[in-house]
View 1: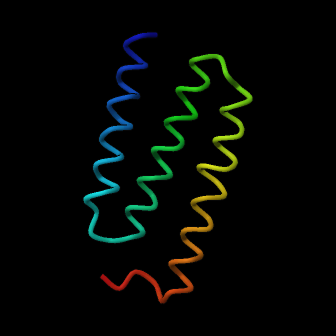
View 2: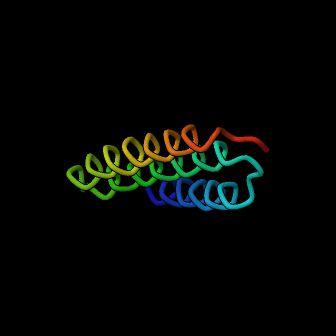
Length: 79
């Protein structure tokens, strides 16, 4: 499992860098959501299903929805 953990950790780092460097806000939000979903996978590997469910609901689900709705209310991604 160590190899899988390292691989997921590298994907999280790549997703975080893409979220910071993305030109469009929507791409950044999608990268942040992916990062949260990968974190859920790590929590499942660490045998913390309660934390994984909470992260999936709040981090990947609710936070992404709020960010996309706020972007939509502001007039969209004009870049």
